[in-house]
Length: 378
Ligand code: PMP
Ligand code: GLN
Image (tube, rainbow, N blue to C red; front, side, top):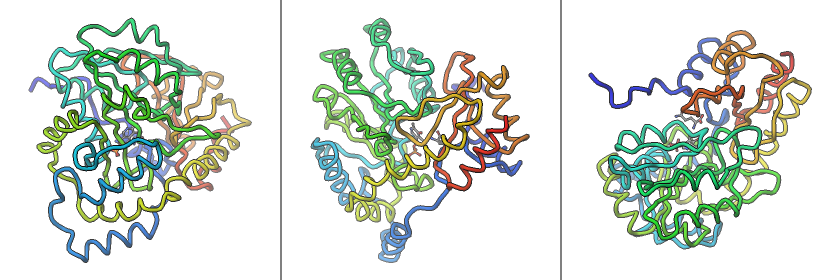
């Protein structure tokens, strides 16, 4: 069968997690919390399971969860979204990202992608006949050269993919980035997908500049989020998309036939759980401590890094340690010293020799310290 996705294999997250399991390595590869979610959240699900919330949810999500999201969005970013026409609950951010791309990309359309890029973007674009056009960000800063971005916009550009805080670099967008993007798309038929799954995980006093906070971008962006990252429930696969009514109409046409709706009792539980802002406002301090713990534990090593600005990933350079390709090194470290990581080259389409590994620090303190000790011996 001629493949529609000839370049796609099993995702690196599955490959490395499996290798970690087989070898008994500390798994700092795939991005998921190594600790459980709140028992209160589990108890809420139990309550709703027993109350019979066990049939299909409404296609767009249960109304109380959409209302809770509207409320949280207004309280956090000062931006209004209508829960009836502008908010859709999805089966993880992955579904939201796919549905947004599918809603606007036609065969032959160009889609700007900043790389390194999360691995679901390009397949979503290609399955819909889009042509990814890459803007390559390079270490150590991974700053965006807006001149270069402008030079890559053509009359075929239909969509721009954004991710802030960024996986895998931990970089976060500034208000200048927002202004530059707004200037670029204003009055053009170009839409934006903004992957903001790490919206509540920012460090050193930084604020998340959601694209929705810029009036121009508010009107042309699909803002995609995930409860998986915010409440330590990656296994629930519940996310959402906030977008202006016109875009949401098209988004829901895809969502309706991709999954139709998302798991019901969890949606009710999340609607209640969202009521206390402390539950997401505590995340920066919670993860900043873990980031620092991990960075302290490798501070005497030959790894070089800029502390992540957000997300729960730390990307480090190993250039002073070895010349090996990053994939080979990630596999070797898993087998030889029992630490699994992600080779950053997998987030680039073009082969590259940046010599970077990504470590997930959403893990127990003790595990992070043990990992740091082993990495410091290299
Ligand atoms: N976008 C980014 C940048 C991610 O890191 C992830 C996964 N961790 C996702 C999207 C997917 O989120 P979900 O698990 O809610 O589908
Ligand atoms: N987003 C997670 C990561 O970057 C992995 C999600 C997945 O396994 N598909 O590690």
